[in-house]
Amino acid sequence: MKQETVYVGIDMSKSCVDVAVRPTGQMWTISNDESGIGELVSRLKALDPVIVVLESTGGLELPSVAAMAAGALPAVIVNPRQVRDFTMATGTLAKTDALDAAALAHFTDAVRPLRDAET
Image 1 (cartoon, rainbow, N blue to C red):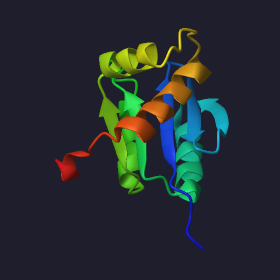
Image 2 (cartoon, rainbow, N blue to C red; image 1 turned 60 degrees about the vertical axis):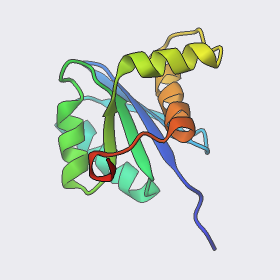
Image 3 (spheres, rainbow, N blue to C red; image 1 turned 90 degrees about the vertical axis):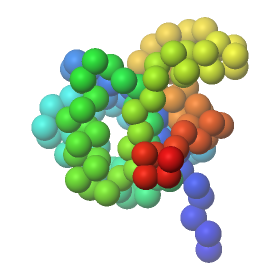
Image 4 (cartoon, one colour; image 1 turned 90 degrees about the horizontal axis):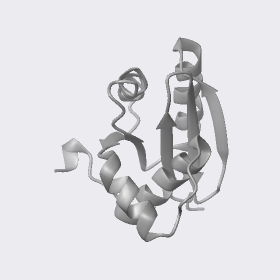
């Protein structure tokens, strides 16, 4: 049986990480600290995503991206302007961390940004 293709969007803030999974619609929030990042990597490994996308947030994303890279997860940091333009084009105007994570997952599914190894 073929496994469903999974795309993940992650919205980072100083205190927490919001995660959205597409196409399942699964969402969760964890703390943005060492234990939360460990939980993030474990949960993502279980999902076996094709790609995990985070916006560049002035460095807040770096510990999570480093942990994902160490866990052999396909993480990509994207330009927030590209995602904002995409969400405006899809008519998503509300702005919360959970909605931002869902928008990132949708962006990832629709645009399929390339990882450095693929460029």
